[in-house]
Amino acid sequence: MNRRPDGSGRRPAWPRPLLPAAVALVLILALTGTEAQAHAVTQGDKGYIQEITGVHLMPFVYLGAKHMMTGYDHILFLFGVIFFLYRPRHIGLYVSLFALGHSTTMLLGVLFDTNVSSYLIDAIIGLSVVYKALDNLGAYRRWFGVQPDTRAATLVFGLFHGLGLATKIREYELSPDGLIPNLLAFNVGVEIGQLLALATILIAMGYWRRTASFRRHAYTANVAMMSAGFLLIGHQLTGWAVAT
Image: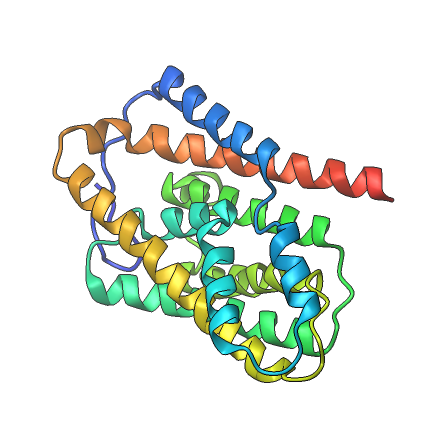
């Protein structure tokens, strides 16, 4: 039985996929995606931000936390990253790499007014979900005989997730007065939201891992996550094609 490349635990023996459960989860994610875009800027939030100037730290902390907690693409990726991580130091390392990546490009993307298609960036974010699900399934070893560096991949995809955040922040049309303090506050809020989402996932995973169903359904969960990633990619590429 193969160990994870970082030594954080053993892979379960994969059963045959439980297709009904996978289809149900994918449909739930698909319906969620049609009702609300990941990290969408609500009209109320956008109107408030456009009306204020100067430094407003707490509102931006709140908006950053809300942005992350409602971003199902980020949450799916985090779910995949920690799926087979058991030791706190491994979880801390991977979450820190992800945070470093998305914090860097989020701040730079807004400050330098990066003009990148939000559809294409969000499609890459969907690809990150697919990538991580395939990694959890051990696909790269079976297909190519190699195991990609999971730490480097987490950092690189974190950079793209940060660009996705930057494209959404630019929709707020922030005032240049107090821009940097407000951006830093927003980033603090994003990290708070990420910690809250991570804590929720870890609590749920902790209960699940203590049951016999974890081994039975781990394969199914990652297949469903991969399918959701493909849905996100298709949705964003369709939006890009229509917009252009």
